[in-house]
Image (cartoon, one colour):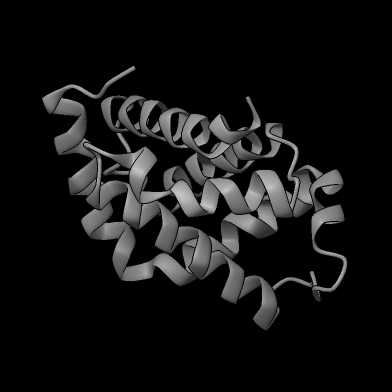
Length: 142
């Protein structure tokens, strides 16, 4: 699966807006994940998972930094996220389905934060991009 030129343009355009609020978007995305899919909390037993906690904000910032790395390296997402993929597969042993759940929560957060900018085309481009990103993060499981 590869991105078209139009999809890349949509992703880059949206990222320019997202990156200005990446920390809070990441935190909101994780809060949505933990509330909507409480089973995902099992990977964070040492975190304070209360809304607005410093640990959730810090991890949300890390998540969005990884998304930003993928945006910057759309031609080699696999290479850009190789270490992260290995960490999640071999050390953290995160259930691969969680990447899809996180992607869904990020899409909902983006739609809520940017209702005018998050057109159907932008939604489609980001959905495809996050599917690629999720695939890369789970490729070490195979």
